[in-house]
Structure formats: structure tokens, C-alpha cells
View 1 (cartoon, one colour):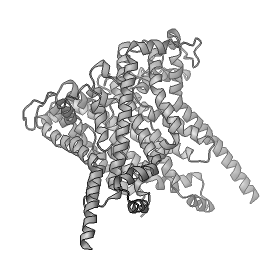
View 2 (cartoon, rainbow over the protein chains, first blue to last red):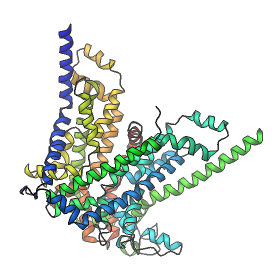
View 3 (cartoon, rainbow over the protein chains, first blue to last red):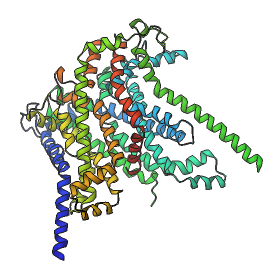
View 4 (cartoon, one colour):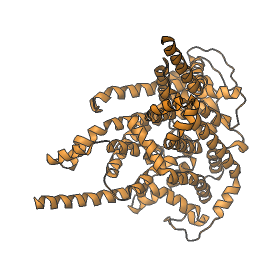
Length: 297
Length: 285
């Protein structure tokens, strides 16, 4: 009997490894091996052809001591994250709140908010370049209706990053749908009993909806931070990081050093430093979560 | 009592109308850029740059589509993009479901440990592995081919998809497998004859998300492709813009519109599944 049990366990184990083998292989080739290799690269000056020498901590010293664009790009990226993530979070919450009512044509609204997210490729980025056009763009025309002469957006150091942020906020469809799912999980009875106690709309939102949806907001926040630090395509296509490096993001810095200047060692160093920054920030957010994220148990 | 309900009902009506108006305005803002893209694509050059901008062009023209498409080898780019998108999606759906089945259904001492590794890779930003992966593909002679954009999808189909499909597999009672075992089916037959059909909605979700991702992907083609004949639409569009600048905006919008339309059609066809898939991530994430 025991032997039979053993053979079943063995068969289970064999099946387990058989079915997960594509992932296991992929994990070894495309994650573990590159990660180890990447750590080694940090201490070399390897180029695209794969030749280079061991140079100790020179890459790290260079990033902190001799590379002003390291700080510039990091600060630009922080600026992007610090503005676009909270704005997106709040806006997604408010729109989801509106969508959570019994409203006619909910499908139409959901579609409208979601389409920018699924189409957010180069084509739509180019569209935004046109929208931000200083003379003929939609935004400045709209502002002119109110007698405001709009800035020259993408070529103005002060306004280029806000423009990228506006475009980023426009693609919040995903967060809206996720928040909406969180809202729909809140039991109806809670609102009913609050109503009997005489709570008005605002009280219900602040006391019931907001606390109960915090796990979803937390999920969106973490995803927003991780995604925000990797912003690349939009500024790369619209401004190439300009004017005067106003939209030069950290990811662009990694890309330039790795694939334009063929400095694989330095690019890997920058990538690991970014990873550390993201880890620190998400850990801080994680630590604060016990003060504001509501858990059932 | 009666007046209480009456005032409550009026209050509800006001609130309802108000949120309706706000929603319409917001939805308008989200949709308007597309309408502008649409209208600019049909304008003649002189009208594209008139102020105030007109939503309905006075002279409709199809020239922008024809001329723009001819300007670069967009047919070729479309073919490349389709190849990448379809094959990578096939790889994603097949391998993610295969692996998810393994994690969901079989006991092993290593199951938890390895599944934690799956989840951990979700947290790792792609930049960290970007450079060594590039060097690896260079060494394999895959540079300037579509392989780097396709082949990795066949190795597990992405941590997120494995996670999603595993959840779906686990929601199906295991009695189903056991009954099939007794009837003489093997593990593989159970996977593709019983469980795959049972999680079809989830597979459609994964496929849709994979299609939009690969169709829009910019970073990987930018890194791995060099020659014009291998370009995808994303890279082709960017070069088109670089050579035209904003001097031929009506053409740029026309070509952009053509590349966005397949995704839009896909969205309308699969809308229900899209939302369902995203919802899953929200609750279980």
C-alpha cells in the first residue's frame, strides 16, 4: 500500500515537471541566466559585441559621481511618477464611482474609457504629438476659446513633461475597470443599513466605499509605480527626451547607454539601480499600507 | 413619510442626471482624440492646418490613405506585425495554459516554491534582463529577425498569464479529471480534451490581451530590428513620422488610423472577455 502511494506521488511529481517544463526552461534561459549575467556586467565595460574587461566598481562610481544625466533622468522619472500615479488613481476612482451606478449605456462608457488603454501604441502617441502642436493642436485651440494662449507644450521645458503626463493619465482605462470590479464587490447591504442610519451620499462614499476599495487602490498604486518608472515610448517618440532633457527619462538613459553607445556594462548598472529604487519605493508604500489599506480579516 | 420619499426621489434624479452629464463629458474627452484622428485622416493638406479646426472636412479625400500607405512598405510591416502577433499569441496561449495546468493540478514538493518564483518574476522590471537577453540573441544570430519577438512566448507565456489561467483551472472541480482518469484518459488528454474547453473564456481573455500587447509593442522591435524589411508597424510608423515631421499630418493620421483599426475591431468583438479578464486581475491580484 505504501509503495503504491509512493508511486502515485512519483507520477504526480513527474507530471508536474512535465507540464511546467516550458516555463522552467524559459525561467532559466530568459530570467535566471540574464539576471546572473547582468550582475556580472555591472563590474565590466562590456560592449554590444560582448567583449570587455573587469573594471570593479567603476560603473557604480560613474553613475553617482560622473553622470549628471543619471540624476536628471531619475528626477524626471520621479516627477512623472509622483504626478501621474496619484492623479490617475484619483481620477480612476472617481470615474469608476460614476460608472458603478445603475446607469443606462454603461457599456458605451466603459468602452470609451478603455479604448485609449488598448490602443496606446505608436499610432496614438503620434496622435498626441498632433494634439499638443503649439499652433494647430487641439488643446491650444480649446484653450484659445477661453482666451488663454496655450504654451508650446512639447518644445517648452516647463510644459513638455506635463504634456507626457496628460497623455499618460488619458490611458487609465485599465485602472478604471479594475477599480470598478473592486466597487462591485462591496455588499449592497452595507449601503442599505447606512441609509437607514441616515447617512448621505458623501458619508457613504467616505465611510464605506473608500475603505472597502483600498485593496484595489493599493494594487493600482503598486502597478502604477512599477509601470511609471518604465516610461519610455511616449517621450522617446514625441520629444526624444528634449527640450534640454526636460523629458529625458531613466529608461531612455538605459536604452541610450545600452543600445546607442554600446555600453552594456553601464546600462546593466543603471538597470539594477532602477530596480533598487523601485524596490525601495514599493517597500515604503507597502509599509504604509497597514495604515490605510483595509483587510477583511 | 411620503414627502421624505418624494424628496429622496428628486434628490436621486438630480444626482443621476448630474453624474450622467459628467460621464458624457469625460467619455467625450477620452474619445475625442480618435474623432480628430479620423477627421484629419480625410482632410486635404490645406484644411488639416486651418484654424479653427473643423471636425468635418469640407473636402473629403482618400488620398492620404493611398499616398501614405505607398510612402513606405507598410504592407510588409503589416505582414511582419501580423506574423509576430499571431505566432506570439499562439505561443502564449498554448504554453501558459500548459504550464498553468501543471501548477494547478499536480502535487509536488516544489510546487509552491516554483510558483512563488513565477510570481516573483512579475515584480522584476524587464530592464534588468534586457541587456543580457539582447547579448544572448545576438550570439544566437537572431538579431534583425522576428524570432526574439516570437520565440520567448513559447516558454511559459508570461508569469501573469500563468497566474491567471491557474486560477481558472483551480475553479474547475478535480472530480472531472478523476472521472476521466478512470475512463482511461492520460494527463495530456485531460488537459486538452476536458480542461482547455472548460476555460475557453479565460483563454480568449489571454489571447486578446496578448494580441493587443504584441500589436502595440514598441520596445522589443526597436531593440531587435534594424532593416526596413523586418520592421513592424510600430517602428515603421515612427520612421514615417521622422521623415515627414508634422508637415504631412493628414497622411500620418491616415496611416496611424489604419494601424489602430484592427485593435478597435478586436475590442468591439471581444469586449465582454476583455472586461472579464481585467476584472479577474483586480479581484485576485
